[in-house]
Length: 251
Image 1 (cartoon, one colour):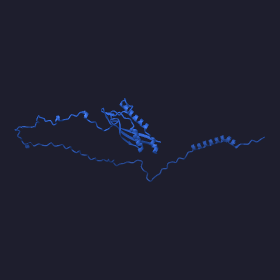
Image 2 (cartoon, helix red, strand yellow; image 1 turned 120 degrees about the horizontal axis):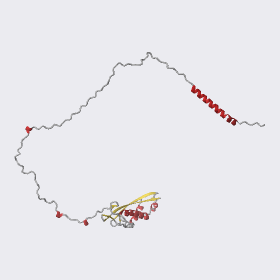
Image 3 (cartoon, helix red, strand yellow; image 1 turned 180 degrees about the vertical axis):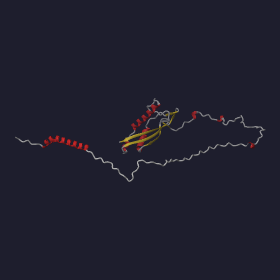
């Protein structure tokens, strides 16, 4: 007959429930003792300090009331203006028997004209010269008309003018000049301003560019823009100042 080997782990598993029950019993016993335990009550021991103090006190002195006198503010009396007293005994008598001959000097009925009407000059409207100062796109009544924008109303004409000029510049402006000049990569702007005169031609061109070669290129593009129909104000052709910003990027 072979002897079976006892494994200590299996034996511990058998006795684990017993150990658990014993632990619970022990805990309940300790709790019970703690609940039933009573401490001794210590009676209050009176402490005497010489003569015993009376339980009640009587105050025979009368109560004192504190009062504070508030000074009364006297209102300033309103001074009434005294009416002047007239002494009738000192009034001088005046002789009113004479008559007044002339009270007001009336002007004469004859009025001399201060302006000689015959000397005035009649100026005809055709001789009045209009101011030669240029108008802006906001002050002009009718904006200049770009070629191809004819027959539109004023709002459509202004939008067509702006679009046509932008398309023209984008088509003919050579932005590769900036790369040939060795400019750093980034965004650059060129500010252009010119006049559209009474004949519809571009004059008085002003350009501000980051390089002289770019300024020359913009000037070449602007001068090739076809003539406009001039702007109108009061049914008369006028000069119109136009501002054109050009923006390009160098990669």
